[in-house]
Length: 153
Ligand SMILES: Cc1cc2nc3c(=O)[nH]c(=O)nc-3n(C[C@H](O)[C@H](O)[C@H](O)COP(=O)(O)O)c2cc1C
Image 1 (spheres, rainbow, N blue to C red):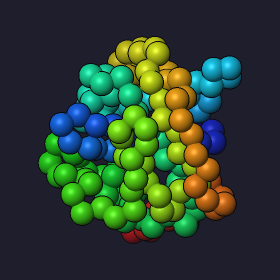
Image 2: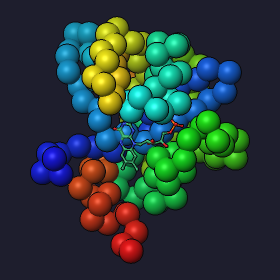
Image 3: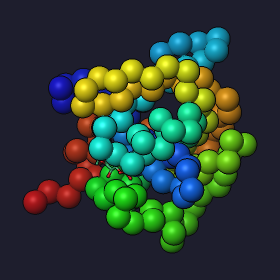
């Protein structure tokens, strides 16, 4: 599976609190209107919030993203910590959700149109309601993350 190519993203959602997680599964699957597909592990709080609220944002990470950002959003759950309590470098989009403004090159806001239970993951297909270019950095691929960002132990 590592021979497939993916990007790396922060997926954000909002219930009573803001939350977000790292995903490598985000692709454009339709145009006019533009639709994105994301896939969330069943146990993730972010999955639960998106299923309940029907909206999400995707921030596209760039190659200069520090490991700390990946660790912060991708290796702990919002069930245990408030991930945005002290996190600098965020703004709100028109849908009221947060997106990242540092180490990113674009953001998308989406409204969920289709939900499909895949067992281990919930697949959401969202229609893009807002998008912004936020920088010129090269998008971080999953391969770049494993090669250059993830600490070697
Ligand atoms: C490199 C990387 C890629 C990941 N890709 C996904 C993904 O595609 N879908 C997903 O649901 N979780 C993915 N995760 C795991 C979530 O980010 C992780 O389970 C997170 O702690 C969930 O947080 P939450 O419970 O606050 O939603 C990935 C994590 C990393 C480090």
